[in-house]
Length: 377
Image (cartoon, rainbow, N blue to C red):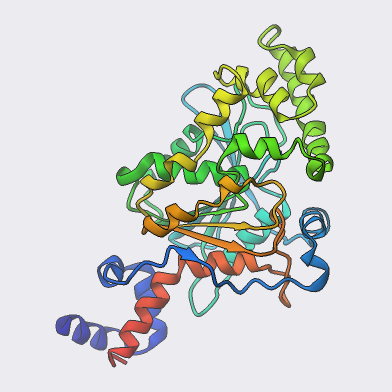
């Protein structure tokens, strides 16, 4: 530690330079390794304005009327080994840190919550430089249908794994953080759990917002009156995709049943399950849920769910796991709805953007504070 002190004192003559050093070069894990984990976060600072304390208003307003941030997207098409493709939407600021975002059901990389998170990370905050960002469009969600019969689903990590490996192979980035929203959160958390100890060291953090981590119980929530309006909107978007698939791949599934589906149980049994190699909806939900894999996560991971999120079942709040899994942080807010969390600041950013930034930079801030207290500066 004495050698480290003299080295930093001589090389970095102010705290701004020190922060840049910690952000880009310093092996933080060696200084933060001894810090006690706090995986169950019960005290949070999300306090919505009065109107947004209503879960439906919070959810719907954020989805439909939140102002859009302007980003200069650079689209890249990644050809997959199986003959399909994934479209990526990049927003670069010449950084060697990267944030990869995965959207929710029937979303895309240009949804308001994706734009806002990517825009926030492109900027500098707390004297830390902005990051490059990339929006991951799940199959058939980029404005063009995918080529193969199999589409995207809530547990498909193969495409994400291939794209991340491809990005790592460019050797451009020193650090990559991944954020997923709703089913995108299920995908990224499942990815981290599947990788376990073998996850690439460049992957530094994973965050999931409003995550249906146990798909069966969440699908049952959509059969309740409280979610009727949301269910209709999802089916209204999903059924035309099923019709299009039937035209391209006649006889591959029962289109009549898919179009007649009244809920996710019927739709996933008729369409999502069969086209993706599952026996039925129950087989699909069991194999695609991230919940059983959360115990295997080995990097700092944050799951944020709101208690008033009508999409989520009690199973999506794994309190006991968070108490025993040092890398898995569970933060529960009293309010927030589903991907709502409205409480805009003067620039239009929400609590979710600020919270994500703080989490992925927490080790940098902690290490800076430790070094300051050690009177290096």
